[in-house]
Image 1 (cartoon, rainbow, N blue to C red):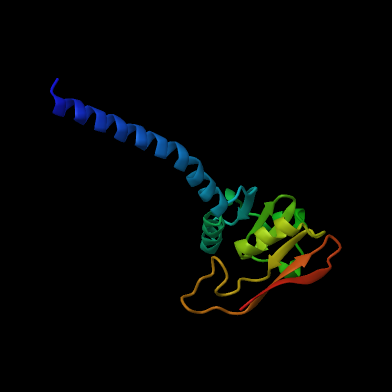
Image 2 (tube, one colour; image 1 turned 45 degrees about the vertical axis):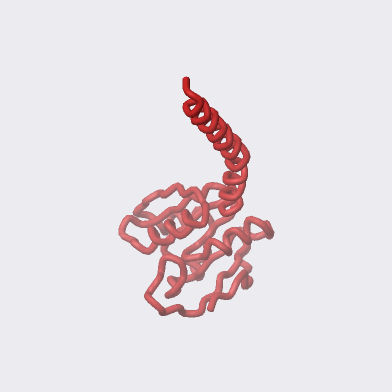
Length: 164
C-alpha cells in the first residue's frame, strides 16, 4: 500500500470515529430536547358525533400539543354527557376524558395541560357552546372572547380561564 493510500485510510478511520463519537453524545440531547417540547401526556379519550367536523379539528389540536388521542365515534352524545356528569348548561359538541377529568368542548390544550398540572378538585372544565376562534372552531381572523369554566359533581362552576 502506498503512503497516500495509508494516509487516506487513516483519515477515513478518524472521520468515522469522530462521527460515531458525535452521534453518541448528541443523540441523548436530541431525544431530551424533543421530549421537553411534548412531555409525556396521558391519553385523551374523545367521544364525538360522526357528523361533527370541528371535533376532528379539536382532536388534531390536542394531538399537536402532544396528547395521545383515542377517538370514539358515537351517535348518542347525550348519554355520554349524562354518564360523565356534564351539566346541560356547559354542553358542547364533544366530550373527552383525561386522567380522571372531563373536558367538554373546544377547550385549548394549554388549559387541559394546566388542569393536569394543578390538579384542582373539580370534575372537569368546559368551553360551553362552540366559541368561534377556539381550537377546532377556527374562522379565519374571527376570534370571539370565551370563558373556560371548571365544574364540580355538585354543579358548582367557576372561571378557569379567559380567552380573548
